[in-house]
Length: 235
Image 1 (cartoon, rainbow, N blue to C red):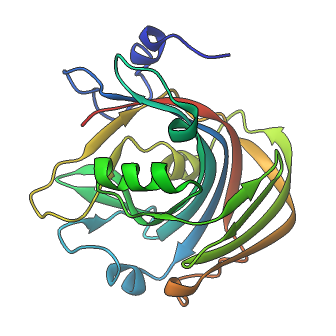
Image 2 (image 1 turned 135 degrees about the vertical axis):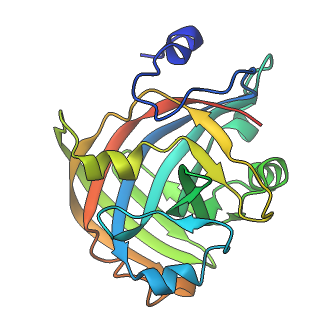
């Protein structure tokens, strides 16, 4: 069930800092999300992340995550979604960074299903969007792109009623960094906490050619499924 915007804006106890004091600009939904989390080598990761961003760590460990989901109902405030632009499948490879003590995510790559939304998202956000053929059903995900090959077939299992500190550290992130400008500030986002479920994989084939040696993408250390979140984003 979709929540009213007012309810989302007033659900803030889980956030590590206050939401921005000016109006949000974007509405979007991140639905049917698969999270694959990998512990990786910090030295190799440092080569891939701009130096003005500090690598975030959990108990001294460095992590990257592959997140596959459907982006839905994307539109600016006071407008409405347009189906062929506002809904598309996406897969991103992200890592965890901080700047001036504010934790967030940095995207190593983002694959998107449709050409026009890919171009628009890259121009509007400055994030590394690239078009790739993506197909999915409720429980499968397939990507055949220049940067990655992914095949996922999974079952949703029990709900995780009490996520561990590591699971929360990996999923509850409320700022994005583009990494292009040493003077950049974070792009803030807000949503209610992720509802997480355990998953069982019937098939998991995953390869990022550009990131060989970063980690074993065939064997995630932690994984989750979530039905999704409604997201508000600020410029």
